[in-house]
Amino acid sequence: MNTRITSEQIAFYNENGFLVLKDFLTPEEVEELRAAVTAAVVQMGKQKVAGAGNQALVEGETYYDKVFVQRLNLWKINPTVKKYFLNEALGEMLCRLTGARGMRVWHDQTLQKQPWANPTAWHLDNPYWSFHSRQAISIWIALDDATLQNGCLYYLPGSHKLARFDNVDIGQNMDALFQHYPEFRNIEPEAAVMKAGDAGLHNGLTAHAAGPNMTPRWRRAMTCAYMPEGATFNGVQNILSKEQVARLQIGDLLNDESQNPLIWPKQ
Image (cartoon, rainbow, N blue to C red; front, side):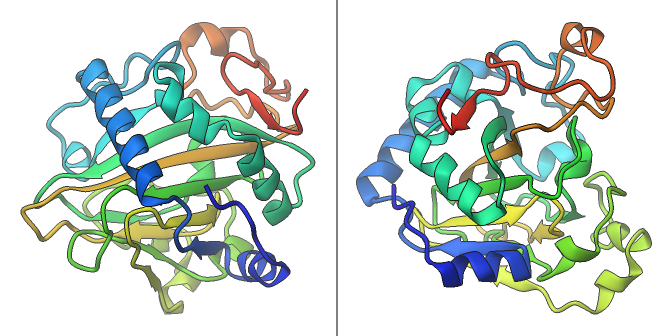
């Protein structure tokens, strides 16, 4: 895992709200992570969230379920996934990019576009989550080549500077987000074509989307969302269990090591 970044890359991320890192994983690491993700998905069956979490999230037959196969918190059940996404050097890199004093896991997830999968509409990530922060960040690692044909990511550069915490569900209208943010309509999107092992990083308020998979092959990715140390509960359940939410009040610190482990700095 190549976590070295330059001052120029940090500046690019802060200006544009995203950064693509070529050759983030070696071919051997890609193979190891891909096998671990495959095993975890098989173990979970139709259940979307592993371990203690929102067990109401189950794969169905909706439009959203045909956007991608989605399984969350694989780190809780697979030691190889945990090794990659709770990596101390990765946490340090994320803090350098965002300026956060520390970084916790929010949740990981594999996002796998099946052959002929639906497109992913424009959306923001952080408003879905149980905390609000302009330092939230996600890493998106390509496990297969992500191309214009099979549903690579697109980013709207600079949208993180304009975004609030208004959002939409990922539905059939690609431009539904622009009802809340008409100023996004004139931003030229940047396609993030990646080879397997490349990684994209984006701010939790950067607008992003993905095209359909127009091929008979899978487009698999493994991602993880990170929460800056000191973030507090905003009242949104997201992946938290009913029991976890019942113990929280708005404004409480989200620092449960079993749910959101601190990966940098180490305790």
